[in-house]
Image (cartoon, rainbow, N blue to C red; front, side):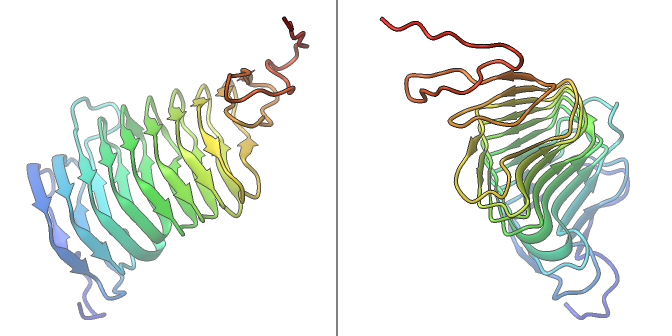
Length: 248
């Protein structure tokens, strides 16, 4: 692609639905453009097994009908997205029921960014060497599950409300593994390995935090760190309550 190009490599017609892009290599060569772009009011746009790279804007950006519009159904699956240092590998806005699964997002500002989404599933992705691995800064009732976020600045940022962040692997993130900034979110079964500057930043409100294989600093939240057969410990189990262990 010539650096003078000013239009996306692939543009989906504004307001289109039932569109699929499958396969292909899309290289913007550093031009200030999107790789694959769906303007506002798009629905049922499906991107699968595409390699999109070196974009000055997002590698993939999809825009839905609004966070309150049911049955939007955007999907990005099995894609390789990299080389967007000021923007995102995947960026999906104002869409419900988005699915991002099995993507590899690396060397971007944000690996996956879902904004003002509802009932979205972000699962089984690998986000490495980004400034932020996964950003879910707004919206509600989203699920961030079983992702690997390593060697980023921030692994996962969870804003919004009523989201579930479950069974993710956070490793060697230079700022924090997970940062909470929303309300009423649930953090459970996330594994923090060595190398995170801080495992968990507790800036949300009304969250439920279930620690796994290591205590977390979550004052003021609904906190639970159960002793397990494979995770015995002497730390606080529930915030504000003592503990008494029964030995047989």
